Length: 244
Image 1 (cartoon, rainbow, N blue to C red):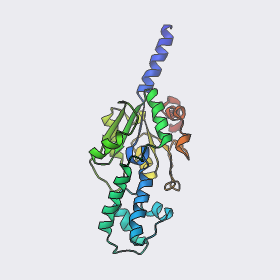
Image 2 (cartoon, rainbow, N blue to C red):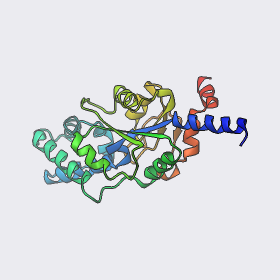
Image 3 (tube, rainbow, N blue to C red):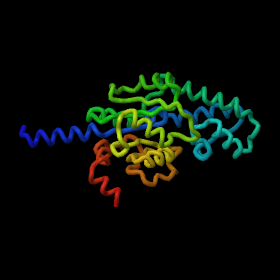
Image 4 (tube, rainbow, N blue to C red):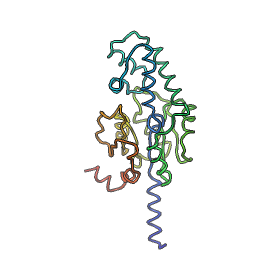
């Protein structure tokens, strides 16, 4: 190998090591929102309240179960149903479903992360679960030590917030410019863009109607994610394109 070829190879390796993909553990790598919908449905059914996908998408996409339940029951004119007790049951149902052995990482996203790992691209996972629960869930993720889990202690009405992403990036020693956020909803998309990250959106059936202005890539299915297209977001040419 010539000196010039060696330098090119070294530069490519340095570029890859300076890149990372960040995403939420329970609400992106695992199907947290689908499990939340099932939890709401199961509990509300016991109270003779019918919940459909449209109502859930409109009133229940914030991360606070209490706030979602309050808004939903007010819209359905079902106030006084015992919201506090119902919220506790929904949380327990969600927790149980999330930690059941049948709950596994989303195949398309897992395949992308494995390829990223092979290319020495860092992976940062953000979680808002209690730390012990997050670690248990992380044990089901077939990645090596290159994947870093960052558990947030701070609560917020809607997640993830911009400071959550910044906290994760600081933990893995990456700058926003070198990071790509993989998200499924408008809140996560906006907060990722706000800190200067590139953003790839894979909306689910509950968020497909949302606005993703500013996102670099939007795909309908996780199986359509291509690592070469995603990593290209960090090239100098792409930065110039975004600046125009």
